[in-house]
Length: 264
Image 1: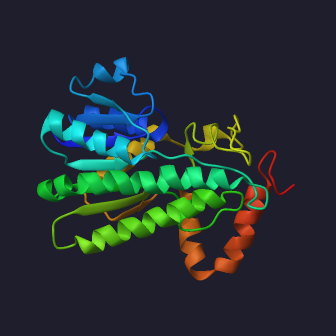
Image 2: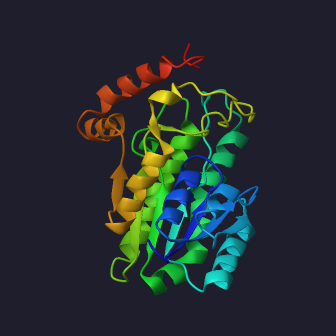
């Protein structure tokens, strides 16, 4: 990753921030996008060449400006990591449709916008395009209609981009971290669009964002096409291929055990 120009969206917290530090340690030149874009002084001690760009990926113009700034600063793009994303927890029968629209705008359209503007530069460098998806992109998770829909859509989109450019040297990685210790559940949207403010999971038992970052950078270097992490994540994807009805019951029961589950 040394001297590679890497754009990371959603870089201010969670997996995005962990990726920023991991790439900085490996000598990458970073373009870090987030809605606040406050320079991270701790990160700057490791990487003196990080560019922080205020970006809301749900806005097409912000994504265009992010790519423009990256190219103006470094002259090229080697890796684009579409990491920015939000989650939700609510029954579809109760959720405000604006919540689902917001998830699609950020998780799906944010990936589409950034990829569209970065693609010519990634093709020129024969670089890597990364989408941070989820096991929810393989198996619909009850209470997460908008989240699963956005991740299914992201994966379909990235598969097509991979196939369309398979003879042009573009590497496309779809990464599915599984349940990871981060703040995504704390800021997940409730049925009315407010942040739920708490996580329904025991975060201490989950894979750390730092461990996820190491796996993802390794997968980029090895030019892997898919990455599914955690034992639960791998088992969910595998069993769903052969026993989808059984997995319907399993994911329902798992989600129903969460504190304040909407199924109770």
